[in-house]
Length: 303
Image (cartoon, rainbow, N blue to C red; front, top):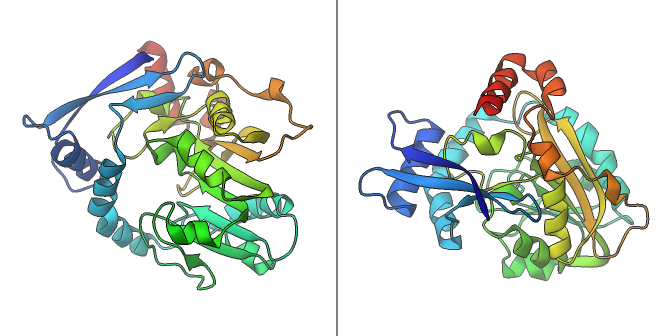
C-alpha cells in the first residue's frame, strides 16, 4: 500500500457535526492523550482503492453510531425530507424497476436510513425492508425495519431480488466482505445496486474528519471490490446526481449480480488514475458550484 496523504486531526471549538466527530475519534477511538491523532489515506497500487489508515474496527463503528445517533436523529427531524428527493426518485425508480424481475419482489435497502427510495417500488407492488445502525423515523409505514447490520432477521427475510447500497459502502471497514455477505442473500437472478461518492476525485485529499468516509472509490476500485466478493458487474457509470445535499454531487453507480452479464463493457470502466486527476470532473463541477469546486481543484493541483 502507498500512503497518498497524511492528516492530523485536533479537537476544535464548536458543536457542529465535524467538531463532534473529531472529538469522538480522538477520545473514544484513537484515545489520544495530547488531543491530536494522525490518519493516513493509503492507496492500493493494484486497484487504486483509497482508504483511511489505521482502519476502524467493527467495535469502533459501534461506538461511533452509538455516539452520533441522537445528533443525527435530531438533525433529520429538523431537516425533514432531503432536498430534491422527487428528482432523485425520478432518476432511480425506473432504473431500479428494470432490475426487478417480477411483481412482489423483495428489496433490502442496507444502510438505507428512512428508506425514501423504497416507497415508489412498494407502490409498484414490491416489498421493502431497511437495515441500518440507527432506527430512523420512516414516513412510509409499509417499510419494515430489520435492525442493525446483517442481523438474523435480515438473513431470514431473504433471499432478496434487489439489495440497495446507497452511499453505504464508503462508511464500512470491510467493503469486500460486506458485498460478499449481501451477495449471499440474493436470489439467483438478484442484483445489488451500489451508489458511492466519487471519492477518488477530490474528497480523499481534503478530509475534515476521519469518521464519516473511510473509503474513496473510483469506478475501477468499486468494480474490483464487487468482483473480489464473487459478484459480476452489469453496469457502472459516473454521474452528477442528487443525494441528500442541496446540489448535485459526482457519484459512481454500480449494478452487480451473481451471474455474468454478456453486455457489460469492461473497456468503459474509468481507471482510478484517471478519476483521481483534479481536472477529471472539473467542467461539470464548475456548472454546479464554480467557487467551491474551482477552489479545491486548484488546491489539489498545487499540493
